[in-house]
Length: 155
Image 1 (cartoon, helix red, strand yellow):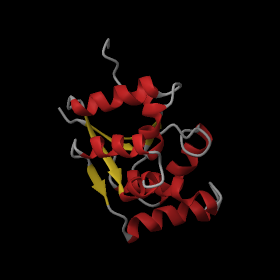
Image 2 (cartoon, helix red, strand yellow):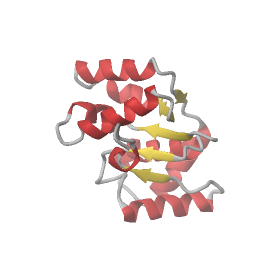
Image 3 (cartoon, helix red, strand yellow):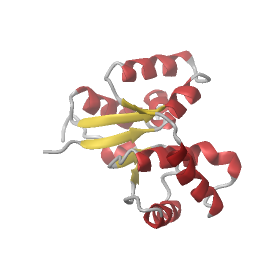
Image 4 (tube, helix red, strand yellow):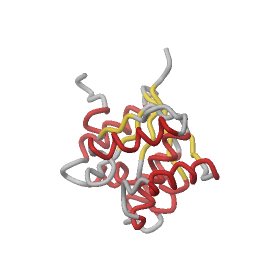
């Protein structure tokens, strides 16, 4: 059976230390450790983590030890992101949020997980991202919070 490929953005790693989100972020990381899901991330996450607290940087290093697929930025990804910008889905100052979605789309991730409810995990925005994806010949991307994706130890 094909394993689900999950793109992890920066907020999920930081969520491992947030009382509101830690249960679900850490459950998702255990799922990766147990081989239930295939993890994906990007150079964008790596760059954003550089400015995070040390405990989050360490968690990212632990995540890297699981061997996630790390998606490099290329022209095609930038074209997808730029199409989102042209549709004014988000303002240019949030281009990195759009970049995460473009990377996950390009990488053919099954799901993008995020705790960013303002710009990423938001129904009206997801419809717009997917309309662009379809126009450009990509499949729709599923976007959820870790709470909706992670399998709890009791599942």
